[in-house]
Length: 348
Image (cartoon, rainbow, N blue to C red; front, top):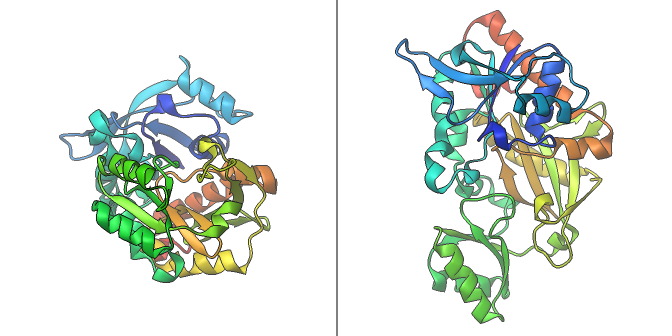
């Protein structure tokens, strides 16, 4: 299999990232693996998508750290490839990291990925689906039963009224962003700080205000879905629990949270089943659900991370399951020599 991973910037990739683990797994299995950054694409005069892509020189690395070290080092190989000739283009960038002067890069993978898809490349997650999900408004297209009560606005009076309706407590955060950045617990009783928080967030655009779920005190569960179903490999679910640090509202790991084993019950499986049809229709191959109590807080479709954390607690290499699934899709496409609808590809 020939596979290219699209990332924001290769220099910013870390060994613990899920992307690194997936790429190392594919490389060690003998697949041809490249990295492509946002600056690397070219739409050539011949009508094909080209890229200045980077690969590691060897076919076996004992750890993600060793693999990434050679990708970052002077032993890496940079070569021009025809993206239309790879089997899989895996879009693993986070648009929220490309703001300000690099805002042009937010949709680079989607833009070039859509052309590659039309030329027969398997592109995951589907670039047309990702285009719909460029901000958190995408979450509002899922059934109301799985979502906390939500207001999206730039009107301070409307936001204050919503917080009052929620009993005086709500979570506020930017419509665009990730990793717990700009997430606050808004308390109506703390009027001066609340107004300052709203003013700060409004400067960057629309605000999401959500009802505060008391179960958030126990952290959240990150559950991975693959092909619309909970990712289960060798009897273990790809999931882990994130616990918040002290009084910090955020449970994101790089926001100070800690990790623990997650027990997946019928409750989490029911939530996954409710969102499955839309995720499959939108071509969302690998997704991370953030679950608090009986609600979803977010559906992560851009570069969901944490497979290594799930492996830490479950003692199963979930990266193998993901690469296995991509191999099945490549074999299927090679056999029938045509493009397929997302629903058909999701069964592989």
